[in-house]
Amino acid sequence: MNQDIILAIALPVTLFCIMFSMGCNLTLANFKTVTQTPMLVGIVSQMLLLPILAFALLYPLGLPTEIFIGFMILALSPGGTTSNMFAYLAGGNLALSISLTAVVSVVTPFTIPLIAGWILASQLDSSVSIQLPFLQTIAKLLVVTLVPVILGMLLQHFKPRFCNRYEFWMTRTPLIMLLLVIGGIIQQNWQKMPDFIMQTGFPALLLATLAIILGYFFARIMKQNKRDSRTIAIETSIQNGGTAILVTGTILHNPTMTIAPVMYGILMLIPTFIYLFWLNYVKVR
Image 1 (cartoon, rainbow, N blue to C red):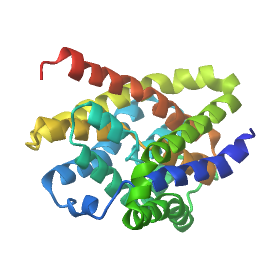
Image 2: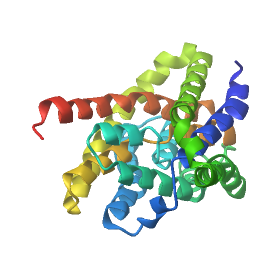
Image 3: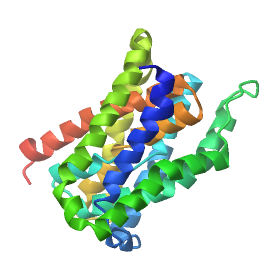
Image 4: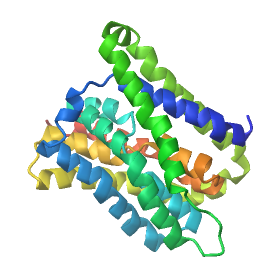
């Protein structure tokens, strides 16, 4: 499949389906906990500390500018849908994980264009004509993230039995679609993949690993219990690669920037599985 078709059509449709399936598992109660301490700690860890960590960690590495920007846009895209599953496997607070995913999914369509626009302006040379249209980006992100979440919540409200009955397929199918999209992007850039892996492999693994550590210890410092701290650690590390790829590939039309979120979306699973193994087979709980 042509990469332009993947980024222009397949990716937005896939992200829409992912967010719709997430909405089908949400109720208004998930948003009522937003002022509770674990929620606030999780939001700060995801939306403030992780971007700061990404900048402080990756900037000194001297990465190519577009690769660095790709990582920063990824760091501004929290709320990966698989985080809920990993939080459950880690013995975390599943309700907190779902609520965090819901809240940040509502907020990021506004924060990404604002902060990513500033990053582009500060990192790119004035002769490079890559700009992030603010209002257009907000509109596109709302259409493929917030709107499907609302539609999914409406379906959950009026047809809860339908959502419960088909929950397995409604959640798994979009994730399979995303894997196919990522596979298509990798296939289209196969000749360049060794270079991309050399440029992004180590930074992606390092960022994902330190994000888990940062998320956990920040939560503990803020006096959260171990169950909530595990959840916040997972939520901090697992990012919404689909949203980041949408911004870099579909809105900015920059395949090089897209490689960072693609590689992170794959490699972030390694420290996550190591963390799960440690919790379930090494650590005495």
